[in-house]
Length: 243
Image (cartoon, rainbow, N blue to C red):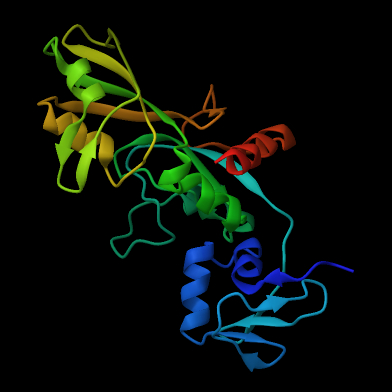
């Protein structure tokens, strides 16, 4: 017999939404269990026997799925765009449409984007308290002031509070008038890297996320995706347990 599961965890595991968003669905009266509207958070359901519906549509637990996409620049992290601009869901195919992205990359940024139907692990990976690192390669206009690294390590003030890098390294850029910065963050706030570069007076030419936690983008081509291997999924779950 399967162990009972909290309703919001069930919804997250079924790929409906993150656990926090699932809690909002419950509180809004949009979820039924065995025909009855449930609005109490923490309500337990039997994963094998309970009939769970969201907005009148039955939802069931799915096998956990994870994919890694190399998001190209000029692509939105959204399911659709009223202006008709390309989205990441145009790249992954209809069979992956139920997956949601773990965090975002802004329109002109590129690099690793994880998508999954495992809302429980995804939410924990994104939670600031777990401090999961993200690594970026940032191409900026050179030359840069010598104190940029120390300023970014110490922290710069943004409109939503101070932000800093954990690691910082300077390399020659792809052109003589450019510099390549390798940096690591542990928060992932909205447009955080771009705002930090602006705070220290640097002009970004390109921004690429090359790693998230223990996973690296490697040589995955732009616009391509692959399923994560079992070992990679296990490493993400281990981060969650250690957080």
